[in-house]
Length: 237
Ligand SMILES: C[S@@+](CC[C@H](N)C(=O)[O-])C[C@H]1O[C@@H](n2cnc3c(N)ncnc32)[C@H](O)[C@@H]1O
Image (cartoon, rainbow, N blue to C red; front, side, top):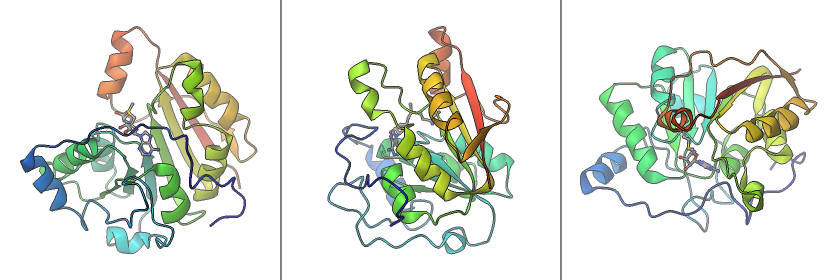
């Protein structure tokens, strides 16, 4: 375990709540057929979404079957960004963390349907996953698009983007690597600018959406007249 991070492995406050993960039988069969393929077979801890204490760090070239720049997406949902972005950039490999199995299953179904081979999903908490499964200093990019906003003040402690998480992402990005974030909550965008922009390991790049497609979460924000913020930070050497 890295020594430069506040221990968060047994966090009581997570950025997600447990939800019933019912899937249609056909959806579950298609998902389970990909365990060991697109779906990484991560040794779980006490909870379905946790990572076992003795889980080994991933061998990323073995995981993807080649050596390529690796991008991690945190909370990919059904893959509305991930699948088109991975398809458009066949030179990268994308590892996603998603705790909600039906969303991970939708991502898997789409990747199979569209024959996108440079995608893997680990159905566990991204914080534990980054800490335990992802080697330090090697990622080309991290994407955090529309993390749950937890708008009520009493729930702000559940927000993913905080100083400890910025430390963790900084430790996993290679120098020069990018952290791309998007949100439709202006006040969460301000929190991201304060936390990541104020972090010594990151410098702000121009705010732009780049190749990020519109997702259903973004559409909901737009329908409710919320402005979209796309933030980009570079990991300094
Ligand atoms: C609001 S949705 C956004 C999904 C997607 N990024 C998009 O833009 O369409 C947030 C997603 O993050 C997932 N999530 C929240 N906290 C997580 C965590 N700690 N680890 C992995 N996934 C997480 C949720 O299950 C949910 O699917």
